[in-house]
Image (tube, rainbow, N blue to C red; front, side, top):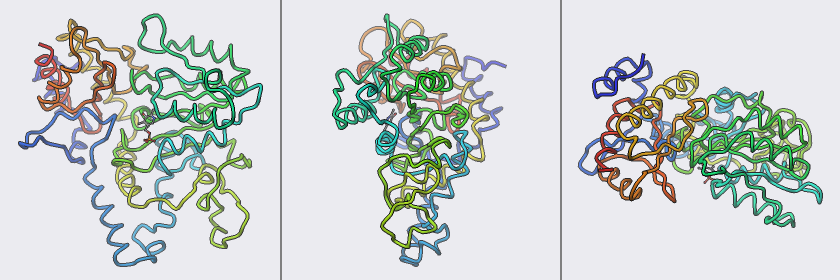
Length: 421
Ligand SMILES: *Cc1c(COP(=O)(O)O)cnc(C)c1O
């Protein structure tokens, strides 16, 4: 049943939405005057789960009352704190438990993974990324190439949309990997491209790259919590993500990392720290590093408990709702936004995100066809919409199935119609 393109249609769809009560599990920002905002920015910073404060407060209380004993006797003991997240994270990304760990932040994890899986040689030292890649990813790749003594001008291969297209042509990316495969040490691509919102076929790209002998890593910053994932089956060597976007773990929260099981028992070269040491013997404080099996063996430090605590709150929600239900609503909600834009704003707004629902997550990237996109964005903000502006000329909106309503999407298109006039 398709949702009616009027306010009544949106309200009826909200009333029939089986996930509607999850909205109340989050705090919703309001304007200075106390008016509710239309928050469509979960792709940048997810909203705060109501349970987050309770979990953080518990850790503060345990620190206050227990001191160092909290490592063992806190309500959630700090020593194995990250282990609470292992099973849930594995389910969320379609991995085995040994393949995932919550640690560090995205760019740090990317460097740690490249220390292990970007092992350039004179014959094979290129890194293939997309263009325009998220700056941090490009900086990371370029600096790794240079750090190993190679020249980024020749060793960084960037695949860009061509011929006036906004999105990557999968066939061209595959061709490029096949053509240049022998000199590519690492293929590093996004699960969902941050600017266009395009989803890449991770299974196929991984297969092609591995057939050519390349290592493969994915940046899942915009994919995790947005799309169902099957990382183990797809078989990439590693993946990294942050948890403050769709996963709602709060600003700068601890990120996540996947290392495929085929690397779990090997002594892959790495940068080591004591938290990656076999936990059975860690506190013998011996001089020789012995890695834990799997992704945990890449941990460096004992983790920041206060930044893991909100992730504990948020992951419990994801685990209860499950990605299949979220994806089902997401397809409907983003589809509704697309239909409203086509119906009312086709003359003024171009959607650069793929129109095929299977080739995108919840985000739509919009370009104002005529005139001043930035001005339209500013008027939207003044009208109470929270979305984001990405240079040079794109407004990104992300109706998040966990806490956004059809009524939010409807209200957004009303305000957008006013803003473009
Ligand atoms: C959000 C995002 C990042 C952020 O990196 P941090 O290390 O968490 O600051 C990096 N890469 C991509 C593609 C992103 O979308």
